[in-house]
Each structure stands twice: as structure tokens, then as C-alpha cells.
Image (cartoon, rainbow, N blue to C red; front, top):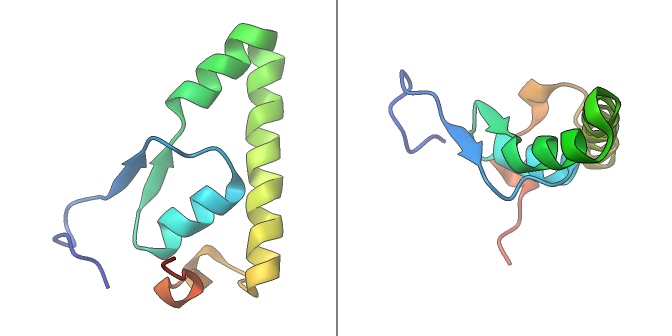
Length: 85
């Protein structure tokens, strides 16, 4: 269940470092995540190739986390996948 008005997109910015972070944000109702700092670090360290590697890593890590959670699509990411701790 979203706490925000449905017409207002929910973007998570900050603290996204892995596919599990992306899964958590999407499962809790975010429409998208933003990747400012990791992209800048990747760009600074290896240019365009570094950013490609980062985005590939995040995609693969998200797919792996989804497989472990039993979710086959992004629509299958539901709040019951997240346990507060």
C-alpha cells in the first residue's frame, strides 16, 4: 500500500548500492530509484565503461535478489517481501 497520492511518483534517492536496495524500494512502493553517487563514482573511476559495468552489476544483482525472493516480474515485488528489523 502506498502512503503517497497515486498521481505522485515516488522516487528513492540515496543509499541505493545494490540490487537488494532496489528490490526493497520497489517492493515498498517506489516507482523508481535514483543512482547519482554510484554512477559518479563509476564514471570517475572508469568513464563510460565503469558506468556500463555498474548498471550491469545492479541489473544482475536485482535479478538475483528477485529470484531468491521468488518474484519473476517487477509487479511481483510486494511489501510482504520486506521484513522490518
